[in-house]
Image (cartoon, helix red, strand yellow):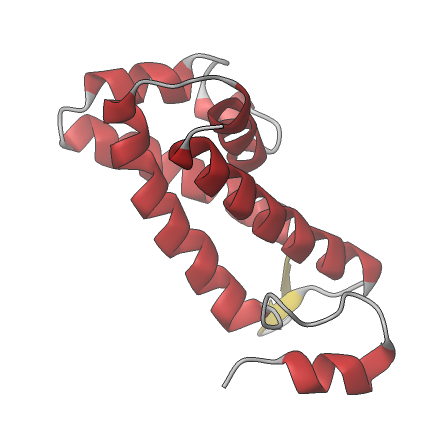
Length: 134
């Protein structure tokens, strides 16, 4: 397994854990009566990556992102991108562009909306309280 594939596995695990916690706890982040779930961010993140890669002239990245079809039609777009990065030996130019951006985005989301990576998934509020980030 390449270093890029290992990073994709890490990000996939973190993203899936966040999604699982939101589902398992019946949680959604709310503001002014709006309910936003993790899945709502999937298309936004993938769309950002696609737009940014187009602006940057990263044609290989654009082709990789659109391989499964238009972003707007991709179900669980972030998970799909990470799954492909895990399973296939993707060109280094693509992984060098995508993985740092995805790492920053997913880790930022985890910092704002989730417990520390080492916090237990189950164990009640006491366990979660001990695992939240500073």
